[in-house]
Image (cartoon, rainbow, N blue to C red; front, side, top):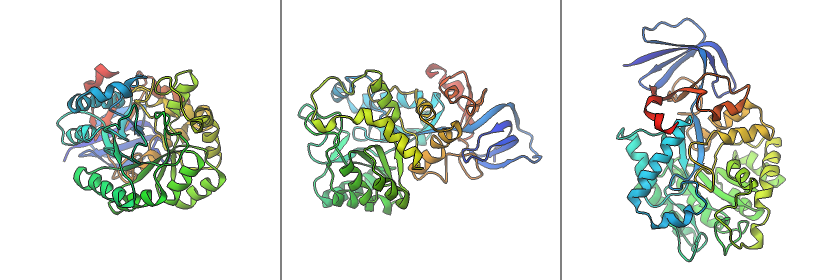
Length: 405
């Protein structure tokens, strides 16, 4: 049994119970002890002048995409093999930024599932990757330029939704299920706020996912789509523009979380139009402008918020993942709250809170060693020079990531 004893100046646990002058013991990749008492051990690592925190978790990325504004068009001409290799590179960029777990929320066929498996098997280096495989949507609901992307699983009716969910779970071991409760900004013929999958369709998918202990994330803009998703029992509302008081009450009652993906909407505020210039239905209007006030309402109402960037969307590039936490602090979170959103709450959104997201005994030793305290300035997490070392499963991996930092 391999053992490491880390003597740390400050431990940001992710739970809010931070410690000074503490010791973290790691054995075979797991944290076995976190204490301020004297601890024996020969293999000691002196981090007494450092801050250690959990590795960041990004609960909403698209590894197939580069972040280019026209990438959604050009991706369709690429082979699965090319996309898998490109997705691995994007995942490594996230790891180099201090993001030790990413959740990919719609990729072509098995491209990201294969990346996940090669990393888990130790074939190659990367963060922990969790993947839904494809996203369930109605026929034509995500078609662009007259075709459906390979990242979409089209279903019509509860029976089809149930069958395709079972296939994702049983054939491919999907880590989560993603549902298109509404349209999107990417389609010219359906409005972003228009409801799509029905309550019955989403309920069928959610029942199957929950049988396997897998969470369900629902892409939602607009009141009707959010209501449908919550009535179906989904675990996570993604984006969530148009949250009402009733939605917030229902989220509290059901224990649902919000993943607001502010990184992509703040980029739009900078003048970057999502997925290029195109005419859109009137119901797509206001989605961008509503993102910030919607987040502020959720924050004020104590809706649990989990960090997710939408990295891969226009001008939201892989490796910039920590910027999501900066947006949270800009809009009213404390730095400590933002860190929890990007660690323990993000883990909760993936049903991984017993394994990841905090520095506690029994959890994987995914940790960042920092030269400065992000509780004083959250933007320090966006500076690669602040991240001295990166532990993934108890192993220091930063030396293998120099090309990405």
